[in-house]
Image (cartoon, rainbow, N blue to C red):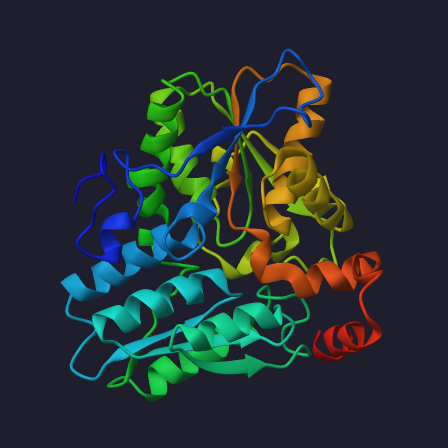
Length: 331
């Protein structure tokens, strides 16, 4: 590989590292304070489109090293989309079968992308998964497949797999430290499996215990795929509250409004989870100086068009009636 010329022998060489980090882009017009500096880390620049590329690759490599995949044995994993998409793409390239167990209410775009990546999909009813990706319904079904068909499936289990954390200790944390030349003072991040927050916080606080880790959670009843608030974290074993300095709760509806601001004011095509993190960072910057803060933007807006239309129906204004009817019937 040659990061200088951007010439690679296969797609896996594109995966991020301290030598090949995802970019940081400064927030300019939205920043409310001249005493604060805020950067977004654009994780959609990963080869398969999200921060979950990091954990997916770490979990897959661990399975390979232990001989858990191959010879007809593939992967089954519960997912709200991003981890499944990353795992499906990587597994298919490696020659492994992938079965994704998803909640019914995740965006159609993610379900289609999983199929494009070659995954077989089980869709679990909303009655078992009232919040996308947050209930045990998908997890229990995936575990059932893994137990009943041991010769066909192994379950990485992103909610308990330590590689989910170690991926960020090895890559995201060192990238942040190097890119900011050790000047990072705040990290703003959402809660999901908690691999990202725990891994980044572990690395950064080892470098400087004074770095503040700010977790942003949506209000209850939210439908932001992949995110959890504190009451929904029982499904994950990776959350370490001792590493987090503050948890901010933001009305989840603001995520969809803030998406428009990021796209139209900063030119950053961020998804709703990133927008929620941004809202939290802006609130902190309004109340106190943020020396150099970094927001983890997990993915882009492209997988959430249907969600945007549902929350902001004005986006369809001016469309021809037939197009509008088609969109509302699909989404």
